[in-house]
Image (cartoon, rainbow, N blue to C red):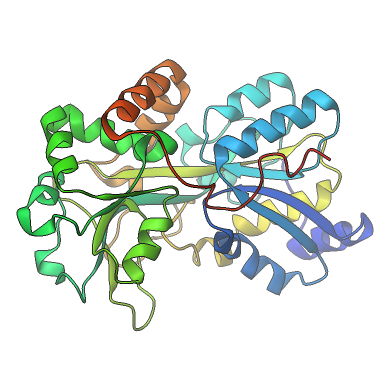
Length: 338
């Protein structure tokens, strides 16, 4: 379904259907909701946006369960679990919609019928507090993290708790072997749940560096934290993918929300990379598809191979130990089962 309505026209329609919008957003910290809602709510203040951030692997199960129960709560979903969208399309659960800008999205990462599409891109790479480690001395390549002076100064997300982090570890080990992981374990890293947690630990001065978190390509004013890329080794990027559910109770608000996220205004304000290829990224950066040492397409293939994913999770649990800690979002798994 192509959109021929302006944002203002969609806004008027959304207000006639109750001025409400329910969004399930993949993420691992409640504060991440503002990435999606801040600009939207400022532009469309009459829409009551109820956006819940939770791990994608919990949200996708909620979507499945709600469809099986015939009680769909969400209007829009955007997640890291890329394998879910072709499945949901095959089930007939997605509403096609081609917002303005749809044709400028990476062709290999958008559904040709408009059932799902990337709304922005994220990347995990070195995040370092330059007040603790000067940028020129910060580790960038995977082997840099094995330097003796970094022992006890690294914080990492459990790879067997987050598929995007798991893919980083798989790619590094394919190049450097399992001895690299043995060396990393000797560095005594702090293991945490969620990819925002390493950033918070670093910002608090408890650790100095990670490669399993993201940060702004344009650093916040006054911040000493920087996001750095390796020259040779792999770093992780993927396109967060969205869809409108066919059973959405607020379809006009859902179309308004997607149209806004793909607008020039919103795409230029993303924390890392825009999904539209006609919108340039931050100065000095390239679109993820232009880098030789990352692969959004490879990550999609990885996510679709659930046997590969599950085997790796088991292996890493044997090396590192079971995941410890509560869900970093604080959302109970059964929170929507009412």
